[in-house]
Image 1: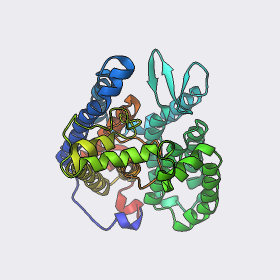
Image 2: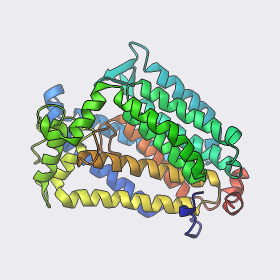
Image 3: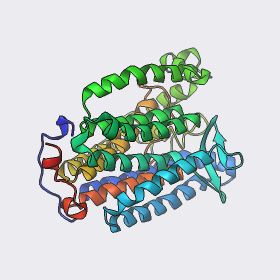
Image 4: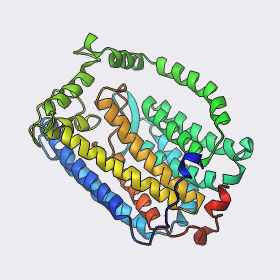
Length: 389
């Protein structure tokens, strides 16, 4: 693994679940549902004549997510490796369905969803779960052979590239780049040499710039991020409205349900910009509290990763923790005007059943890993001391 993650040795986890991690997840889920209701009731009432439309759906998926998380806690970890091939096949199949008329659903120019039996699902979320599990398995298995580019690094890189390409073809540039970044992060944590990243950078960076500039709306979004005041009623409106909501909140906030920007003045208040509503209603104090909760999740998640003896389980914990925390960080950065709008949702907070369901499954996997004493007995993997040198 990357040297920065090998410095601290901590005791093996007991068979009990990590209580601090569990509390952080439940508090994030509860806060997220509360803020979603506050952010969405006006829009839900306007669009559907039902102020509970969004929160009812989100609560249903939250319940399903909790059940899925409990199911993950109950199954043996070595079963996960046998599920990887069908997970990859299902992920690719569902991604391809988004391109079929009548099945794929287009919204704001992107074909991210499929609709079956009246329910919509975003396959890219399943892809995220699949990729993290697959990379943890394959890179953990080949831990002592990572210098072999053709046999050890090329196959998983092709899988990453395939998933990224499919998401990009949905016209979802931000999600494709985020997934690719998570993949590269796991390669780095696994211990891939920096010279390989430098060589890859000469290809990926120019290609990324070309793809970014290849669509007019991406260029407009970038310009509006740099100078939103030049088009305050157009491309710059969303970020200016978000910053206004954060300013309105001050230190203490306006109070839950008392925010004004969500009343039509903040586009996508129930999804991409729900964190701005939180800032307006709970203020700096509430924002800080949520950041602390994600900080606790990161702290416990990375400690769990360090405690694992099986390389796959260590990489799995690193990958899950990084995905959740980085996704939250990206969304916070967008809301606060630090980076251009991306469409990357806030974990536990943003409206969307696919987001929440997969987030809870990832959380369940992380909690399951916190219960692992030693992974070597389950599947014969080399202990970390041997595999990592």
